[in-house]
Image 1 (cartoon, rainbow, N blue to C red):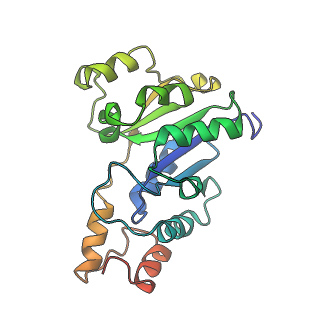
Image 2: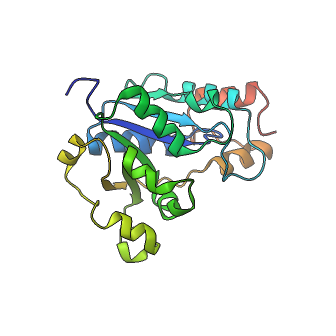
Length: 217
């Protein structure tokens, strides 16, 4: 496929800060689905996130530093340019308008996020704009019976392990087994705030940026 028609991976989040869990997730999804590009999209105003978060300028720069040197990963700052809450459905609609109706898009989510999908803004539309790759832990099953009824009904005829389905622009659900890395952004923020080292949980350049800008202290 040409670069204009090959599947494009999308990984959203607050990235406050980005860490090796995020980066390994993107890397393994790229390998599993043979994606040549994954865009990391920091949410400017995450509507489901309570509490303070770092300014979007800091989070954008940390993602830029985190993906530096990896040709498959790149920062996409589009949500920082939009006014109002960062709704994923609006981001996907914008990408569709920009890239056309035929390019396959693959939205990557963790299994916990996927379970909460029915709480997302206009969540049913997500399947019209993109495929969804659900990242699950090695010992975690993907049982439709454990999903909320509305979500199970939406997924039942969409679930596939056949990568050839990525020739379609949207609408399929893939389940991908990931390496379990128990790293969280909140854990890193706590370590910094309590003057402990989060080194080796995140890229060194991101850690240096956090210390240099006095974040989370």
